[in-house]
Length: 210
Image (tube, rainbow, N blue to C red):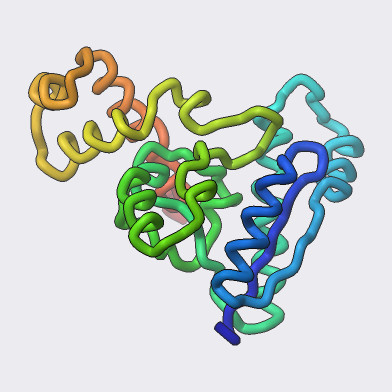
């Protein structure tokens, strides 16, 4: 663990205290070097001084938090010749539930082949504290945010739909029947995957023949 450095990056205006406590317990359990960096002053500096500030847009401000965290991680990675390990799982990657150039900006994705529900199973198998394993998923980009609340679906529904559509190649109707949901729910998940394609690809390049 000598080559692992952990950064706990709460925003004191948004992040619940129990999240910081859980992160500290996990870092100590793993025996990794770790530091806490409160990103609140950085968020405030960017948002309040931006000439195009949009006070009512919580998503734009929330994504600033994700991108500040990416910057801090890459500062450490560059300074110590390390790689940035992302926390994204297959569910989040496929439906695009991450911030472009934020938590999506990483070097490796150790959990990227596992669906969210499988990550929880792995965590239980590894003996992680129950309060971490059972905690509702949230990027904590604004107060009260939960992943399932924002998505409008639980991962217990999303994951088998993704598996049916993209691992098994089943038609929408059969997936809906297997998961026991209406077909519009399957269509919604499929749309999430398609709508977020830009997050999983390099930027389009203009084809200029000069």
